Image (tube, rainbow, N blue to C red; front, side):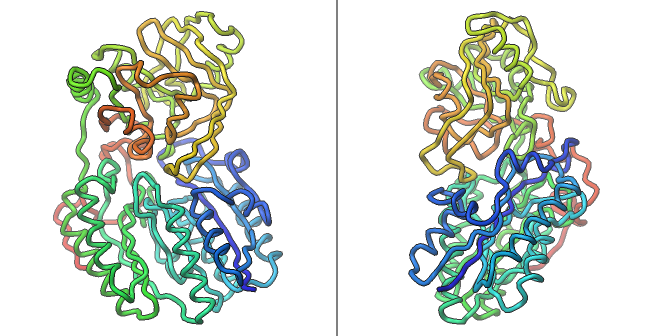
Length: 501
């Protein structure tokens, strides 16, 4: 039997958020060792679910759960938290017994106070512990800020190819099959890496839109070479202020390094030639609402989805931003729905009970100057729930079970309905609304705290999705953010950048 270890450490770190990520954020989501790793991901649409499927297809393979940690995107991981994670990872690996190979799932945009290149740090730790002869194959999030340390620690890395991320399972399956082939044939894959001097604006990162389609057509063509296994375009995560921030290309070949190098160079050159297409198209709140009202005239039976980019929960934002809600109350027309993380309001609603009316403010608590001031109104408590819901379809992030904590639905006298939650949950699933007995068709607009992650869930029920530039720690206007660690030159800041792949 081939004993294949599985390790996952997944966190997208927003270094512009003042609040840090602590060990409690991981224990609230996922922090397990040993057999519990397999139990956590068995049957899920996650990349680790793909690992397990690949191993299940091979009668000679035995999955060995080692370590898995995951937390919702938030601020930089504290040094204490990182030390605890690394100690548990090291202890779990040392107690796993003999291994023939490793499947790993780093995010690629993880930052700790004591390790700016956190994913490179833990992958190199694993490589040192297992030695150079053990094959290591893994996956990367499309938003990975890829470093040389990540690449040199592994034999092959397969990046997600879709945003929203709907192919995590497929990439995990490919990674698992790649490792098994290496174990059975003795031929280890080879990898080439190119880091472009390019920052891809978050607003331009949808892979199904024209600029993404053109990019991935080239990747698919290069990957069709019989020697190639994968060509990945990693868009990067612009809210991690680290030297590696930005776009990169990884090409994986079966055994010939030059084939991988040629593919990586051509892919990077093609992307660089298209760089202007990845500069953000920014629309203000007022402009977006005007577009929404026009759309409502043409399709009055479906809501317009208003994507609030500056408060993107999936990018680490607090989820209590109010800029778009204030804008709708000022310029919009008709009922509007939004989800806001506000545990204090939930407590007040629970204490008051269903049917009660409260004169309070909602949202805008964590950083009102950056994310918008609280929303005052007379709020009627419509319903209360435990905030748990399930999603049966593959969705961004590979989640199927959700817990936003005790939840209250409140109707405001001004026409705004708020789903107030105790915990931040990104709008990945329409069940976040349906589970609260709310019908999207009853609203003229739905405010969504995301950029691309909500698309798969909400596009079927919305007449249109409009991405709105607002202030916040995930603003699409990167000139608002003070970068201190980024590379120079880096397009689009340095417009005259000249680069060869």
